[in-house]
Length: 410
Ligand SMILES: *Cc1c(COP(=O)(O)O)cnc(C)c1O
Image (cartoon, rainbow, N blue to C red):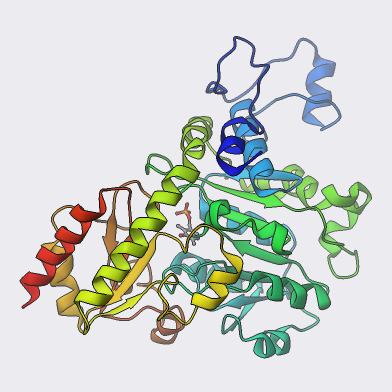
């Protein structure tokens, strides 16, 4: 099946009890069983079925299956947010004394989380994305995973996922990729060697900004060993399912950051139009980036789809169907950035990406507020930088809104 058809049909429950084309919202905390023995069996993971929504729920389960099919993995775990997905994905295999090697071009919230993990004895060594020599040198015996975003938010650098996976595997560690900005529409990172893919569903998958959520998907190919991953020792007998089984029976269940059934329902609706929206949004982003680059020579326009981008070549090689729907611009000073933001009429000033509507934000004073100056620069955040998450509007209206706002700057 091709991409858009698969979004509509793969993983869908076609035997739904009453014939609903969308799995209904099982808005219930717990599920009763016909016998105490059944309940004991389900609770103890010996029988299939549902006992408590924090562990599993039919609506969430169907959403997980649909994402598993989309990403080409063996299973998924849906969480309360993208941050919860990252937290679950990492701490499922980490313990005190371990290290992470990560691209420094990250979403600000992830940098904050990595700092929080230091209190538990987990250290992150940041490396320059795509600097493979530096990355190899940063991997030590204590390293348990390599982490990167396919398209860094908001740096917009494009990770050479194949090369990074090769290096991680050479050193016996998995590659975990946050694919929120690129989405499976542009690249299925599991096909490029990544071991676990994370999506904040709050963004493009949901698409209309009506529910916070996250999901991680395991490719099931990484060879875990008890020596390097002692926390997985009891689960290695499950072969490719070791990682997911430990997560669902342990940390996911115990940390309690499950996705809400209603969110899973809304995400199923969003998922069906992911391809259509991404196609339109990537086209709009390219047209807007070209327009701004041509019309305002003093403005630095950063978009991997532009030939002027440092990341155009790697983007062209690994992304299919576009270069993402985020554009950043540098307008000279923070004052000008604020003035421009305040002069825009059509687009929304808010901290989010991936909506059908165009959104703008000043990263330095918002999503990267808690980063150090160096961390900001490494993540491509400058005082005069504006991030534009391009929506599905008619491009002429977007161009006009920006042109009017630029006219206010003079
Ligand atoms: C938004 C975002 C997250 C966090 O997702 P939430 O759903 O807001 O918790 C993580 N990574 C990237 C790249 C994001 O854009």
